[in-house]
Structures are given as C-alpha cells and as structure tokens.
Amino acid sequence: MSPRPRRIVPIREAVEIPEPTHDVGRALKEVMHSFRTTVESEMRSRGAALSYAHAMLMMTLAREPGLSGAQSARRAGVTAQTMNSMLRNLESGGYAIREPNAENRRADRWFLTEEGLRHLEQGRAVADEIMRKMLLRLTVKDADRLCELLQRCARSLQVMREARSDAA
Image 1 (cartoon, rainbow, N blue to C red):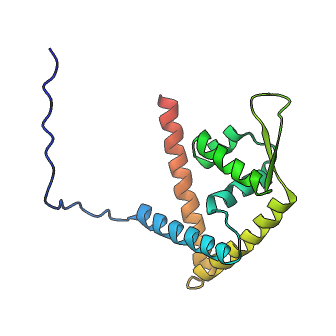
Image 2 (cartoon, rainbow, N blue to C red):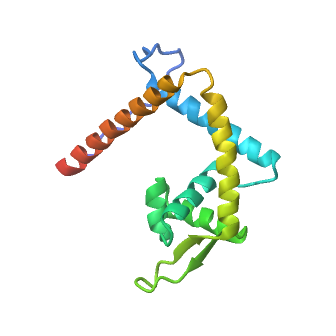
Image 3 (cartoon, rainbow, N blue to C red):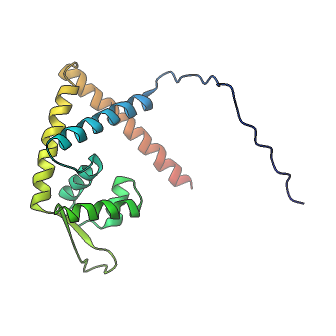
C-alpha cells in the first residue's frame, strides 16, 4: 500500500521566529559580504577583474604550490567543477599554470605564476588597507580580542565536526 500524497499548503501569513540571543552567524555573514564586495569593487576600479574567491585560490596556490584541483576544491569548500572553472580562469589570465602530476596522471598540479603572485600581492595590499579602515573604530586590543574570539569559535566548530565524523 503506497502512502497517501500529502496535501501541500502554503503559509500565507508571516511567521514570528525568535531572534537568536547572539546572532553571530548573521553578523559574520554581513561583515564577510561587505568586506568581499568592497575588496572586489576596489580591485575592479584598479582594472583587475578577478573575484575574491579567485584571490583566495591564488593565496592557497602560493602557500601550497602543486596542489591538484581536487585538493584545492577541498581547501576552498567548493565542488570539483567549480574549482576546475576557477583554475581555468586563472590559467587563461596567466595567473596560474598546470603541470602533469608524475604520481597521478589523472590529476594535474597547479602553480601560481609570477604574474599571479604580482596580482595577488596587489590584491593583498588592497585587502589590508580595507581591513585597516574597517578596524579603525576598534582599539588594537579590541581587534586582537576579536581575532582571538573568532578563532576560538572556529576551533569549537572544528571539534564539533570531528566528533560528528568520528561518531559516523
């Protein structure tokens, strides 16, 4: 006997959902969105057309030369298809180059080029200046404390993820 189809009923009135006591997630999202769009806008005004995500990928390749596309995707938390598109964009702009992987013929190794590093350094300078302006209303002690607290939150989330994967 198959289950009876459920009747789908739209909710036409607003539903009151209580606000969290500390809406850290929303605040983080707003800060990150504003920061990213401000950096991208400033970079576009200087003639650079790459996104913030491309800049983060270039930073990863600078720190870990020779990563595969799959490794880069895992680091960025995106799909392999998305990463493939981003890597090819960097390659077509001359910011990254791929080489065959002697250990795995199915996975290329990716490297930043000198042009990519130059572009990354320009972007870092822009991001650093925007970060400095963003933190102007905080004391150095407050900015240090903010970083410390956010790192503690990140560690707590990491422990939760690890506990979940250990239980599975």
